[in-house]
Image (cartoon, rainbow, N blue to C red; front, top):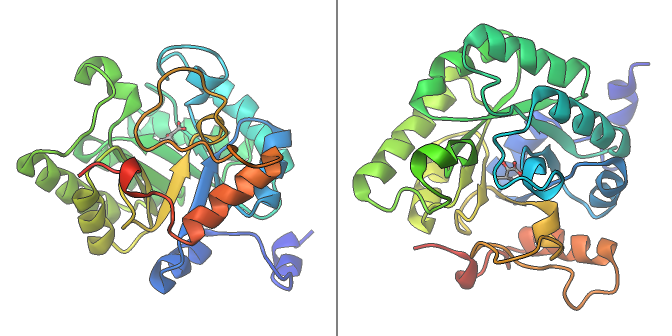
Length: 276
Ligand code: KIV
């Protein structure tokens, strides 16, 4: 009972939205990674990750689909419950899967399920200007929201493949405007996927909430990777921004520590992981 009060006295108290905002203003990189089960969750916690995302990437790396489209709210709740049992310090975010936030009311119902049944502390949804109404409605109901811009894997069939976004000036401008609008609508965090370094730098420098990048260059407020990519488990050709942190390390825990340290010391992402 009153766990939050006891935890304030701890040397490393649990991360919350205020911690993440402070980290941004102090220039301390935020180390984020995905997890899908309790054992890995415990390990990424011990390795020092600040944020854990139960990503709908589970559709690909756990379920073996080619895209994230088949993932359902029930799948997300099952995995979020498992991860939340393994975590003590990191902040837990859960993805809202494809078509689970088509109206503000549907989004609220599903976000509440992810928080009440799953144990998520924030929900993430893909979208720009088209999602402003949903973000605003969730924020009005005190649901913490992370908005996902850049490459949006749930739109893969609409955009025709997984490719870098915001290369043209007009697209980069639109993305920066969307980021500002999402922040104004109440988003507490932004995830930026697969964009040129310059776009990542501009957006992170413009908005006040933390911007977490995946293939968005070094000048954002934090980095995230899909756990199985970071450990070299995912088979096949990897996107440019992926690095296998297990290579040359003796254990999974050491590999994960290597990832967290590389983010904290800004040695990851290096030039070869970036788009310019
Ligand atoms: O689903 C996921 O794992 C993601 C990644 C971009 C981190 O959203």
